[in-house]
Length: 327
Image (cartoon, rainbow, N blue to C red; front, side, top):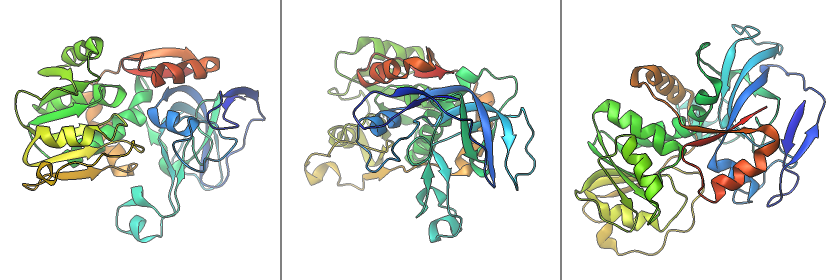
């Protein structure tokens, strides 16, 4: 199999030929059709997340076809299309797993971080964390749903039922969740890097009622704000933008330090929440609404060998939508 491998953080990935892996008990192997590139992949490659499995194959927004089935796997067919997300395995017996909070498992494995992921022609996955996908869907369009969509969905649920939703950082997750908000009858207020007119136009094209730089205040107080950009300085700005009792949801796995801010921004029962990973229920709920909401992802395609270029385009903010690698 071919794979783009990280041997040292803050260094480019290296293309390698590897033996085709065999699935173990409870696992499947998939022939990768597409793997989207997530900001979390950047955090792994750039060393923002500690203790990755080195060497590791990044990538956790995987769409592929089952081509081998390990012992103990039932109700899975060769050739079936599945999606493989960031959360790749949980212990099943810690207090979090037993209480329905498997996203907080004490002994998890993460695809493309602590186990090999999808920047490759083939990938091994825990069958319990592989989700059936539409057979007639475009794998390139489906791939961003496996993290940008899922984490965006969990963040939106955490934001509550408010009508006026602010989104800070209009990238892959935001462009999916804006469509969900439109379908639900909510209004989206998009905050981009100051002066990023292209991103603001992109947000408006997806139904945002207002789009401007993160240094600007929205024309109305927001019911909730979701921060997808990994920038801690946005937290006080988001608190300033939400109404009394409003919520600010931090949707990323990594964020720069949150600066000191006056208590008055938090007062009046405003809340700051974080979102960690996902649950299988999140995937079931979100994937069920994708066809109803007619979600369409905007993607930029790269061959597998151009993974470093895709990562650099994401790192520098040159992308609108999601980068997707094609083996």
